[in-house]
Image 1 (cartoon, one colour):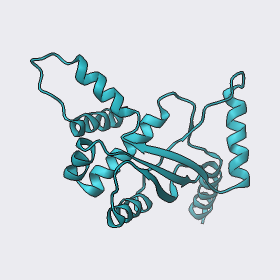
Image 2: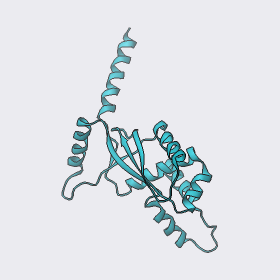
Image 3: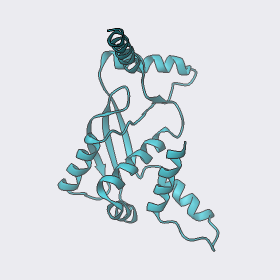
Image 4: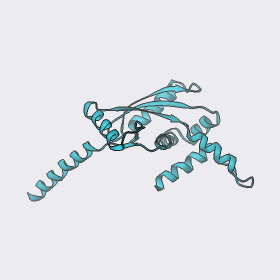
Length: 177
């Protein structure tokens, strides 16, 4: 009986803690981190060949996600494509996003002169009034500029890194953090 009471108390305590957390970042590289998460999903759902061709063809997409306070995707849509993907691929990407357990971060640029705690309180009040927050994530986004920079600074004797290999390297590095 005591075990059941303790379990019940712990269970409700965890619910209270989870509902008060908000996955938010004020970091300058927040959008890049979201892009890397999206890259991981695209590689897993669509395969290396799709992502490699997508990048080699200089394609790009911008997606809008409605996320809850923990960053789970509630709804997703592709807003802009540099080159037409086609309805079937669009649906497959959206389906993969909605069924994934990826937690994106709400990237917030605080108003100059405002403290992080004040900005955090603003976002917290937003989630108190609404269940979701809309974010946008681009692929390959600004991260492709990092690829171009690394490519231009590599020694001539080093093996050239493909765009796909570069994203996989960033994904691996993000798992180590």
